[in-house]
Image (cartoon, rainbow, N blue to C red; front, side, top):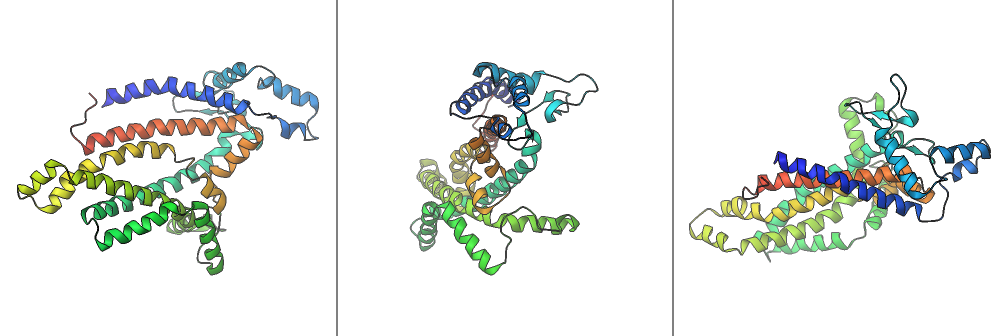
Length: 342
């Protein structure tokens, strides 16, 4: 498994390079000016704007701009004792990692996305855990009790969840909460959060995450439940399940030891792609519910062609895709001993 992971890492390097080159080019296609916030600011003279253009190579061709960004991100190290320029950061190994500068927020990209990235990842991971913890058992129950009253009721609600637009559900929940006042609307913390005890801080954050988490979980759980039900029904019709029952194995062993482990394999594969969608999958919900994640920042960055901020988000998504597929590979070997990557 270690050798397989190392091979995947080596293969991912050129893939990320190709992906970044394509995205960088797509960003530069539309008409627009990255330095428009500075040109429209009377505090900056035309000469200062020209210096910024030259510094970031915006007056050069697209390939030159791209390789300048790559060089500054990985290869340009400050002199000993010199502070990293424009918010550069030192990794534990001492390698310089500078994601660039946000021309909209007028500060380093690292400083812009760190807090928002944590908020988005927290919401996404909690939502994913809830989806899997609920959808897998419900999908298994519906398959084992096919066409029962419980299966029909749960399937009915899953169809509603799949067909209900997430933005409309978010608006309905926000309206109901505004009438009752039982939950906060928007934000990540309440005033006085830092004076609370640790349990109080956790509870305060959890209250702010309820609405966006419910919106995300509702649609995702419905789809996962239907998929798990279909996988389980297909496995239950296999010959080895019939043989296990004919041998007199208890039903719970047939279901949970034999059928479930095979039915969940396709779900684990999907997990790898879901992991990569953690950043993009919640953007619309974050904007509607006023949750302080990366959604609103990325929308603003795209509209303003804030190129380095967009590239940092895209590269983060690419890394998550690679990591998610590696985690899926490991989980597949645990769920199915027949799978080996040696």
